[in-house]
Length: 180
Length: 82
Image (cartoon, rainbow over all chains, first blue to last red; front, side, top):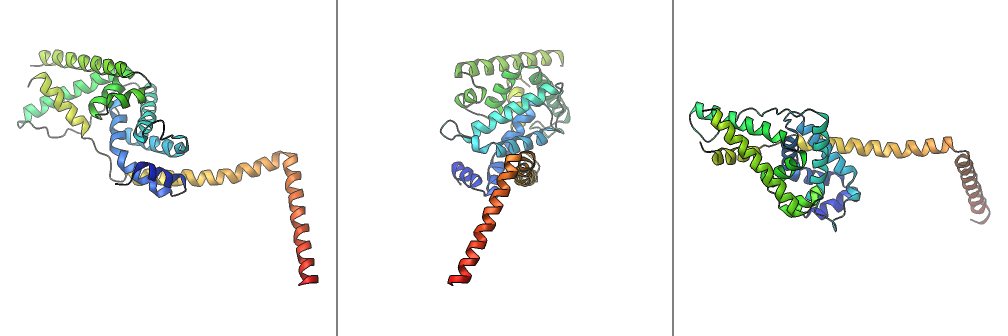
């Protein structure tokens, strides 16, 4: 696997095609992150594309001594996603249903309904809690890296993630009680 | 189904989203486009700077004249001393 720093050096030296390696490495995580923060599965790829174009345009400002490339890229993605979410009223547009692990069609339908409820609840979280939760729980980033992306202390990230998790669990339990 | 199991299943599903196979191609097309615009932009901005600043026009004129004189001097030198 080629080192990211080498790839970045090659891109800065004029080898534009090397940027593809970075795009292929981070396309999934960035698109997923943007989608989970904005709740828009249709526009998320366009937004993720803009994130990569911004990263390419600003690549000279990236300082490897200050942060990892992934931290820098996720910071751009976070800001882009939050700006897009601000402009657009949060409305979760669910992906086409995938087959869950459960077997019967009723159970699959019930799971999808509960997942949709969680998706909607995720969008009602305050933006800071939402981004911290998405980065920690979906992207599995360490708290230290999330703290750098969010520009806050690790303790603040932990508390945001816990609060988000508690709210989602509470909403889920409430929903499960209402829907037999 | 218990809430924790549902919550974990939801997280697993949210982590599994992929991207379209041509995603990287589209990004690279955008990168090449922005690079071309950047290159064209440098030439264009240089030209507009020269056309809008009289001292820049004078500098280009003086530079051209010096280049021409140098070229004449080199030619004369080659004819006389080659």
